Image 1 (cartoon, rainbow, N blue to C red):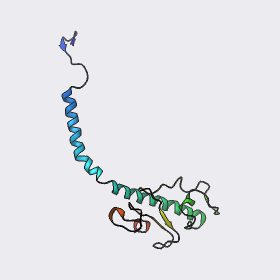
Image 2 (image 1 turned 60 degrees about the horizontal axis):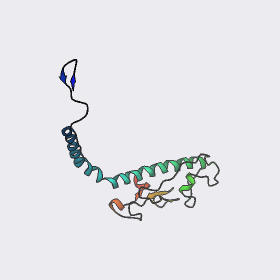
Image 3 (image 1 turned 30 degrees about the vertical axis):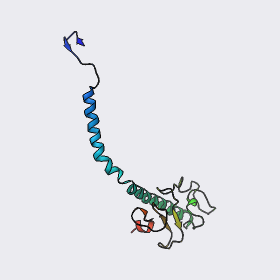
Length: 147
């Protein structure tokens, strides 16, 4: 196109095929360098998420004890943080909106009084969903988080 005012050629808007190819190649190079680093850490992210969730549950348990004078029993379980088990002093709003499973889809284990801690034990059994294990299968336990 020729601009009648300046009498010079102007290119229509948009990108050329070469410009698009250069951008695609650059994005491809970035993806090949970054993706392996991101994809190699999903288990580490799941373990970190479980630790954070255990801390949140511990906070809710502390509020429960502040209001009621005790921790939930093993039979009352963690569900008592969401619905009143008939305990005097229980908060009308509860202590957790919902209790999600651990990052591997299993329930968190709760025992009160605890074996490893005086008040309660709270843990995720890790990737394998069974007690014990090593590396990604290792249990994530509240008594190890607090030390």
